[in-house]
Length: 419
Image 1 (tube, helix red, strand yellow):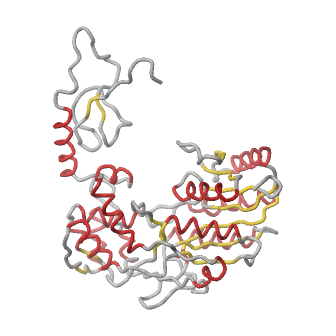
Image 2 (tube, rainbow, N blue to C red):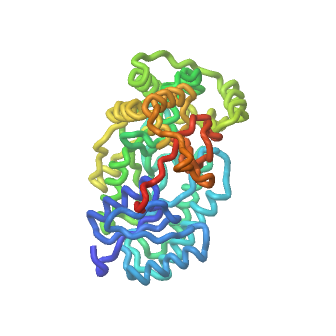
Image 3 (tube, rainbow, N blue to C red):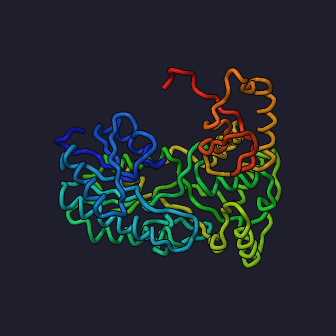
């Protein structure tokens, strides 16, 4: 795609989905620019990125000014992924500041300074009222979000309809995104509970026959690519549900993960909602970050199975992956490198796993790191030891990590002359 036909703009470009979208669209369209907070890594090859705080009027104005100066005013498609998200369940001012008002200031800036063919908004299937097993949710299903995150998406969808001007818009309501390693917080925590043999792994407060639709990252990117390709053909304001047509129940997920990780499965026991809420509340009083929050108990019975007929018809899109086929890959990734998998998913490894890693470390480094001698003293100012889980917090002596308790490892300074 050249400057004459316009470029692709991707917000939220440093996130997992954003990077994948940029990489795919760059290969297909050429000129792709990302907007996001300053990222620790550069954009994918062939792409460029501009730092922006979408919650700031001035930052958005400045970023759009740089964008126009360096890339021109013609935009073929804006893929708007930037949004706020948490699992606290309660309203946060960030939903309004980032998701809703961030979209408003972006749209107004685009209308004022650019010629935009398409504005694609990444929403969620959770804007819809939950169904029951046997029901398939379609785009005309009642809009009835059940917690703060999808409620912010509902408000943003309405805002886009009001603020779009002459820009053609399309809404993609995505199911929960995962990949072959996992990278889905609900699934990752379910795997963690089973892998560690936690009592909570055998308890559930909802109907185990209920479940939620999921979507592989590659299929999500494919749907976005097809929507961009067909931007001139899609009806303005089209909403599309994007997800796998098969929804696995909680019970199916439990038994599959147990067989994969423990080589056997056992029954999941139902816990009354009130008792489960009390238990979740007590857990959240304990040290550490607890994933299960009391508000989640009320959502345990929510069921989302999708009718994707409209996406099949308008995008000629069909998911190429299934969660069922991907579960063994997730389990294999965890078993191949437990510490790396925990770190990748932001989870704290259990004490038993830390001890096993420590035993392996001691066996591999015994005698390999001599103590400093008088002829070559260690610098008293340099950090000498670091935790393999938290290398960003080095220490000046041997011992245990102050954050997770894992034994510290000796640092290995770079050879002189190396950058």
